[in-house]
Length: 384
Image (cartoon, rainbow, N blue to C red; front, side):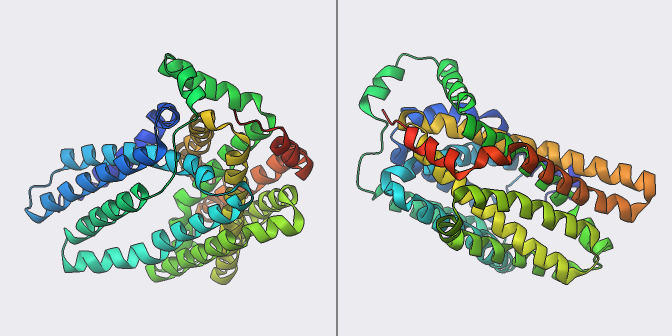
């Protein structure tokens, strides 16, 4: 055991997420300058080396906190680059009319592995040997790098775009991505809306374990079942998103996602019934993934290829940048609510505030998310 200090333990999570704040914008420039397939291979090869080093350090009992922090930061940098490149490369692999289905499959696979397979497998491997999870993780990165390297096709930005940006500065290219996103009314609205939703989601998530323990009166096993319920909703959302969009249109789908977020958060803020809470969590996760599938596919359709990495990085900066702020807001709301009306009200307050914010956001931006506006943006898209 390296430490039981909660602050030092939390530092590993901070080190992993720090690159999203510091490196996401320049990462978009590198994605737009590079062969995206080679960049993804390099990222996963780097993650293979880093996790293999950690596995060996744990095996020979020479691991220490500074090494762990440094590894976490480097893994975070590779994650930022890889995630941006993976979203940017997809339109080069999949026809435009199949983007929603492809994104849904990717989201579904991610939810299954992260929430169904990963946690129990990790627990089993740790029981066998502390170094084993890191070793298996290293092998999966190596396998992923090999599979991506086998992709056939050209995955560089178009030649004329590369020539146009060759002599540009890093700052100039980042600024171009920011200007493009800010000038596009629909994507600007979606980016700001995502930031608000993610911030409110983290305000709730930051205190959810306390709510589950003290209001729902569930133990760790009960919390695990709620986690599984959310994963089920996410998987269903990933597979049904294209069907929902086809049946009612992308605009109404986004409306329902926003409204469902407000309703489910509000109900969960008022209930003390674990079954009701779990059902709302399924719906919330379902709509969150449907939102992501629709909006990611839209970005891949309307953003020019030469700017896709940069604009994606700015968009995700909005979405991820609000999350630590949301966590802080959640803690402050519990403190404020507890001081005003007691502990129970304090734990319910983040849910209720998040619900109200969802409804207000819908009232402000709902009209801009119409199917007409979405289809107009697709029709106007020009990919130089």
